[in-house]
Image 1 (cartoon, helix red, strand yellow):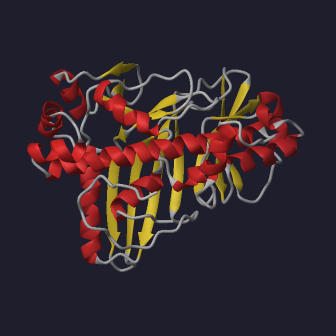
Image 2: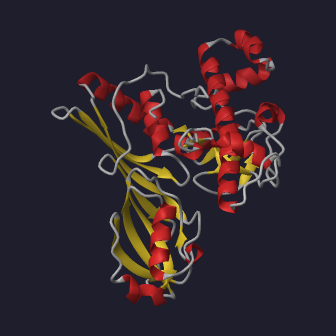
Image 3: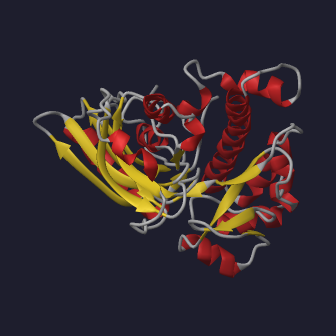
Length: 357
């Protein structure tokens, strides 16, 4: 897909490749571990392997099933990542002699509960891009400042769609019963890719509308967007780069309850203050749908599939954003924190304003 980017700057040239030296991730736990309980909590550093590969290596070493090991989220393979896993503390002694290349147990503690998917606050990233000249470095400085202030679109990154970027094609067939996959984990992964593909298409369309609203006057927009004049005026009056529409499903940020936006000035102000955010649809069953004007647009990117649906933040706010230019090495280093489920590579693509893969 041709993605629509959120910022108005021209594309910036630099070299980026995911590697353990240039892409470092540290998981931020959702809560503080109690220090006691039947579950052993391990803080682990891994390199050049997926979370599933990490779990598989430990499970094979202990002679147990993968499902006995808990983790909060999947981390990138081509990176150095630090994350927490949980396992019953009866395996603690056996793990003292565990030794496998690319895996290091940094620390351990205990907790009353097993770590489950989603039990993380977010992730802290360190990323290095190369072949950066002083002019490009100044542009990156400004882009990071803009993202820190106004946020960024929450696209799914290329990692979601497989090595060839086409997992969503088979995912659609599986979701509609037109193909079969025996492995339930693989089937779910592929269907998720199809849901993510439709979400990305929808979000790109919303960003295109944002750009048009910012670039044309109200009378021109009525025909360009095929929207009522009064609705165009409402979006035109909004100062945030992401324009809310009547009927958008909003969610308290960075987590909370869903509710429907009906144009209230109070909700627009809360959105500007990063207290709430708009959400997009991951199509399926058992999910809230947008209504009114937002609902009409959302229908174009909905599909009836045999899978549970969900809502996902359309717009997120990176925090603790830092950037440093090393002119001697022609490198730019950056640190930032993203909420769970968001992709650092999407932020890099927003800076470059082009695909980085």
